[in-house]
Amino acid sequence: MKAIFLILISIALMSVDHRHGHLENVRSFLSTLVYPLQYIVNMPAQAGRWVSQSVVTQKQLLEENDDLREGLLLLNQKLQKYDILVEENNRLRELLDSSVRLGERVERVLIAELIAVELESFRRQIVVNKGQRDDVYDGQPVVDANGIMGQVVHVNPFSSTVLLIT
Image (cartoon, rainbow, N blue to C red):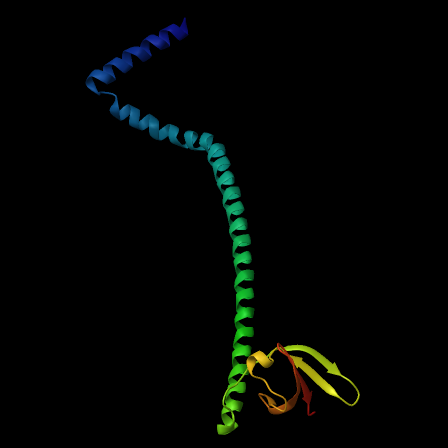
């Protein structure tokens, strides 16, 4: 019976407020009074959302950290390659400079790579990847950045044997 009475009073108050707006101050006062309770009731849901966002954010940060580490490794690898190229470039410049120092006797400079090293007791020889097809000839001097290092003693079509002087 009390419930029916309260329902009827509620319906009457809602219709009076809806038509005339007389209860606006009462509703505002009650809303201010109930707000702390609403805030406390809503806290667990807000805390749950905050924890969920924090976990997602932490996961994203860990993924980003892994991506950055991977990028750093790639950049370090590129930097090492760059350093190697700079060193090789400097060695080649030294070789070219040594050919300029030899003066007019040098018509052309060939840059060769070592294929083999033969270090016997009395004879030290190397084999390079330049030969007759590159116009290498017997007796031709071989120089490096520090000066003369040897002389061509045997020429093959694609390689040559150099007797080292040291």
